[in-house]
Image (cartoon, rainbow, N blue to C red; front, side):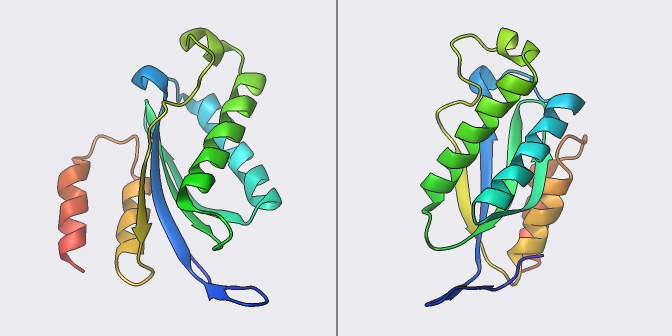
Length: 148
């Protein structure tokens, strides 16, 4: 659950839902890559002021529900996460590099959305948790958003 982050001159609750597709939308997220991704995200959280509230992987993309401080822009957060996770996944799981030619793990684009603390955070949390299962996400997401 998100919390208020108290700094010397501000208090914030900044929540972001980001979606990052793998390069060429390749199916690269198996259980081992998923595990490495989550380990690396814990390392990012320990080093930077980014908290990963949820991480949901599907076969060819990842959903992140993150909280950060106003020091970083949303683009800086995504660039940092994509850069560090790509480098570490390639280092820890060399077989993934064979699936992706050109040396890039993530596609250049991404989706990012702000999430309100009261209302849509829980809907986004459930949506991210359910990644990789065979549910109709668009209908589920739309139904949950109508509740708020």
